[in-house]
Amino acid sequence: MRNPIEFDSNSRTCRSAGAVMALAMLWVAGGCAALHHDERLHSTLWVQTSAEYAISTEQVYSMAIQGLAAALEDPDWNVVLERNDQDRELPPAIIVDIDETILNNAGHAARSIIARKGFVAEFWRAWVREVAAPAVPGAVDYLRYAQAMGITVFFISNRLADLEEPTRENLEAVGCPLRTDIDVVLLREEKPGWGVDKSARRAWVAERFRVLQIIGDDLRDFVHVPEDSDEGARVEIALSHHRRWGEGWYMLPNPIYGGWEEALMKGEYAEHVSPLERKFKHLQTQ
Image 1 (cartoon, one colour):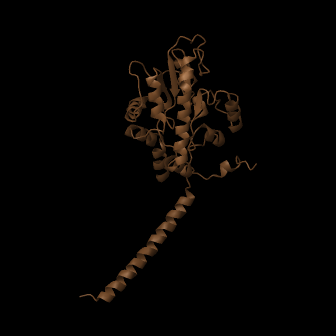
Image 2 (cartoon, helix red, strand yellow):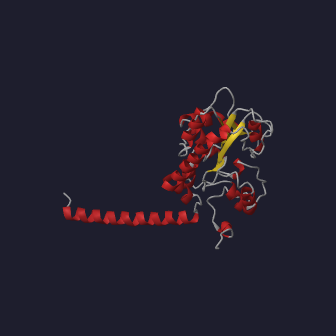
Image 3 (tube, helix red, strand yellow):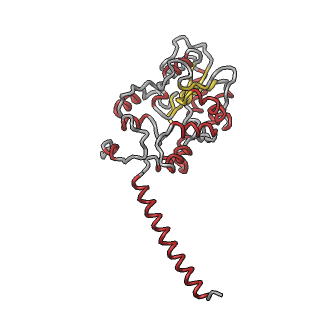
């Protein structure tokens, strides 16, 4: 029989060796994390865990609800720049983006961070097919309120057209109202000319409906933004429409990705696992 004291000593030795090995593994992992720092980490955690994010989106949707009745009663109210001048008699509608506006995809960002991946199309497509994205706080209540007022909801998204079925399933799963007698989910490349720019799809809706409100998380959800626009040009475009913000146009926060980052990175926005130096020059100290 083994001496209990010797066994205990050996256990302590094993535990000590295990602790050393664990520390070594943490050091290596820490080194790897430092080498592969992912720029989405803090923004994704903010969206997933902060009270501030939930309050921000709830607040935007609350403001939109408060303005909906007056917009519905005013026959001249139409917030789409691509509007039809003969739109007084058209039925009412609202336009909403999907990703980070109605559906929260922070879970996909979290998976990408853990997997040390930038944006990978098939990784994203697999996420969409899971039909697992939860609703952005406040979104479903807003859409149901609009539906109860007889207002049609149009979803204009840059998801590709072949993802429409799982997209519809996800929207329905979180409780979004979807008309079935007409197509209200307008995706990229669904029709000729429906590219990344959403202007043609807004115009398509405006030919048939009087648009009371637009809600999105990117400037391009509201207005055409030239592809070569830098951050300054984007701010100028946004401010040139300053009277529309909060009066038919409602912007939601999205710190994880979007046109704002594309403007800084000049097409390299998807390389989230690369160093941050390229963004430093855009910091303002005054």
